[in-house]
Length: 65
Length: 399
Ligand code: HEM
Image (cartoon, rainbow over all chains, first blue to last red; front, side, top):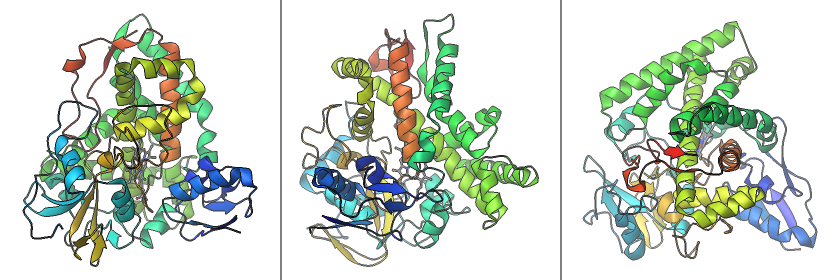
């Protein structure tokens, strides 16, 4: 699985960090999403899918590798 | 298929039914047989009513639906709400890119890491309030003594607003949130609150502290009026919502003793419990409003440019397609897809703070008041049906 984020679209709600903290974080200065792991291990795929589903701004895109 | 010409189903907001935790029957009926339907507002203007989870998400996530209340056709829930749109706008009523520019000045303030660092302080505030409430007494009003002061103290601290002014700003916000307030009343309350925050912003310019208002001044990108408007939005949004969620959650738990016992026995499950309570109670019960900026076809219905849309997050959060057995409060449910904080780029900015406050408030009340119960018959509780944010006016409890 490949994870793509769009920092332009991100509205800093933080839902992705709650769903998958090992993959997403928030930038210190403005709370905008940062990607910690663009190719997360299989055991976090469900959490990443949850994160993408709850993202209010459609800023997370998943690509099945 | 619904069309813009059809007769409105009912006047929105419609009356509540028997269960105070459930959305009014008229909306549930609409969700069943005409999920995107026409209703009329207080002044007779029509609005589209969107009731399903999937459709509400689609509207709130679609930039063709505008939050700009100065656009023709924007649906207002009341005369007061229309009056509000004529004042200095805040970013909750703006579209991107202007909305994003302003919101991003605050996203860093409410991000999870930053909010998590407030945990000890919020816990201390919760404990202090309960110390005071329980000292030498065995009953009291949980709204006035705990649920309302907790988030008020926290948002005051964050903004740099003196808490001793709480009678004043809470009185203003009560008027602004009353659906039956006249345009004149709303105008007066809005003006007083705006003047207050502009005055406070000027004071921060002269003597900065480490609150959000002072940081906005230091950024140098906004004038005093704009900072005052932002402060006004944060002050109101930051205390009324969490206060009402706290008290209504406690009431809902008291009515569902098995769920309450479960949470009391497993305080670590409070994170998921709060999501389920947000879903089940959905206190933003009057709907989120937008206006279409172009023709959009949604669920087989054509919504024309310039037509108002009202998204009922409360019925969306009970949608059986998304939440099977959705009318049951089930603290073990994975409720994270709820729309109680909205959806799209306007989704609640303060949600990490609201979550933390609710988690601390509920666990602290349950831990410290093992004998907690209602001090009056359930039937005598007064609900905030007439307010933009639902809840209870007071919650007399004994312990
Ligand atoms: C349980 C508590 C809360 C609930 C249910 C709630 C609900 C909501 C909802 C539904 C919206 C979306 C409005 C729309 O789309 O038109 C919203 C926006 C907002 N909320 Fe909250 N809220 C809560 C707590 C808070 C707190 C504690 C704060 C503040 C510090 C806050 C600040 C805001 C702000 C600033 C917006 C506007 C965001 C934007 O337009 O980009 N809220 N809230």
